[in-house]
Amino acid sequence: QNQILTSCSNLILKQIISKVNAAKCFTVLADETADISGIEQFSLCVRYFEFSSMQMREDFLTFVPVTDVTGMGLANTLLNTLDKLGIDLKYLRGQGFDG
Image 1 (cartoon, rainbow, N blue to C red):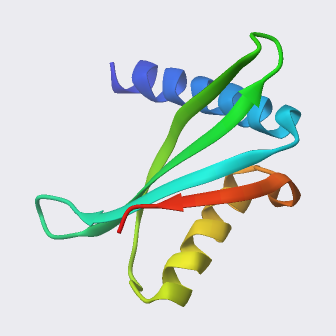
Image 2 (image 1 turned 180 degrees about the vertical axis):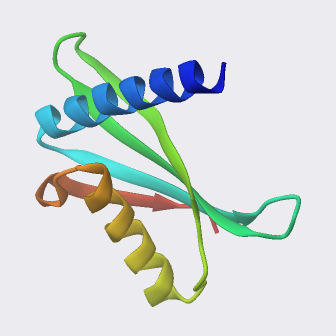
Image 3 (image 1 turned 90 degrees about the horizontal axis):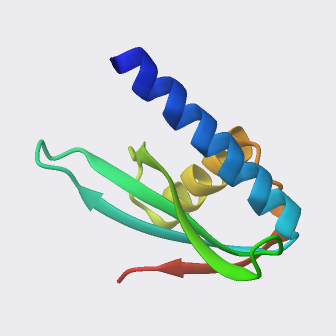
């Protein structure tokens, strides 16, 4: 069951990333918080316009563990994660954070 869920998750994530890169313009939405075990993590989402449906989309990408909660550390974690996911940073046009 876990393999099926992981495969589905990876497929959906690839589709979202493809749509974000095709949009040529996106906003990243991030919220840093501690989970129940006290581990700091980022919740990352993207907002973009999907031309095929002519709708604004807001999709969850991933949770990312955070070790450095300084501004520079959070920025590096965010940019490195987007790059690793294959999202083209040259299309990043906005950012939204809680707090």
